Image (cartoon, rainbow, N blue to C red; front, side):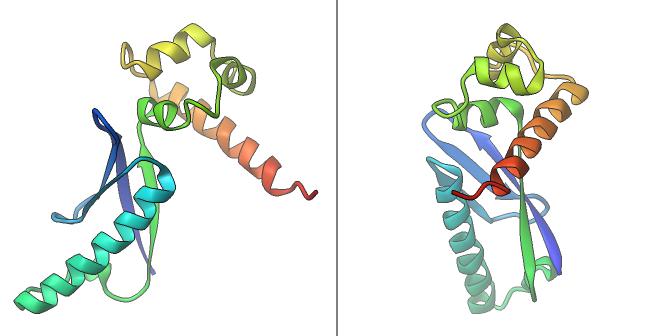
Length: 134
């Protein structure tokens, strides 16, 4: 199974995504779920168009594939702005709110270690939430 890497970036009014290494597959949306749906549709349209035009379908899109989504810290903080407060993120990451504000507003970019700290903290939270039943 191929793993495709979709890069999500914030734009002026929404978010865009493209498949790394495959030109011509792009999607936009206002949320992660909308981007996922639109990207899946864009991939299908791309494959159908390749076949109609007699072009080769990229090997990555033949057979089964999964999509891994990657975004920068600014886009992540923007997308989840109404869900994660800076105070809440400070509690789970240990990164102070002022620094998180700088990342969210593009004033500074986190070092790799800081980005990894945010990612690891969110994954831990996600795993905790997955284990919850009500």
